[in-house]
Length: 294
Image (cartoon, rainbow, N blue to C red; front, side):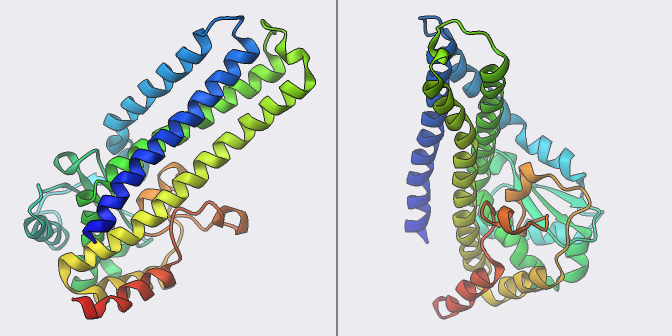
């Protein structure tokens, strides 16, 4: 598992570079079409995107809590959930994260924050009612695995970059149809069409990369959770229940769908191409197949 974590960290650097290349390419395209001979648009695009990602880095945890409607609890509010998280934090030698509860019948949980010192874990009331103690421990060990592996930081940055690319592409598309022509480059229909295609494709590529990153990290968090509890069948049982009894969240937001242990929406066929979660059946088989290692 440690080699997987190291590989994940290397992949994270490559992914960040890929997103920066996409943003830089969009900025260069905009500069070529409307820059008027200087690099103002290109530089402004890079700087603006980086500022946005930095803001997201510090604000994403609070945004996720607000979007989900979660409420922070103390040990007195829900001793079972709080003590489960507390015991896992002690086992992992990590700081105690803030614990939240979401009043929703859909069983689910998520983790967010920029690092273990600023981590947040949350569970729905539906999850607490459905899971046994060992299954709840497995689910929360999965979420603590995201914290330990710094997945919460990566997903936060990736989320910020995906949104930035989508926002930038939308602005450039509007400029293509309604903006002025400073460079006379868009008098060439081939250049203009190529630019529009690039602006449409960039957000799709970014979303596909985000989905691939999230799916791989779900597998790794499952492995980390199983290694923490030494009880992989409990997490496998919990995932099976999530597959059987899962339902859409009342407060859905696709921008944070990748943070949940189970997809909070019910995607259609096309949406599954960009799913941030691997199939639950695959996750269960991997966990049960690893039982001999514990």
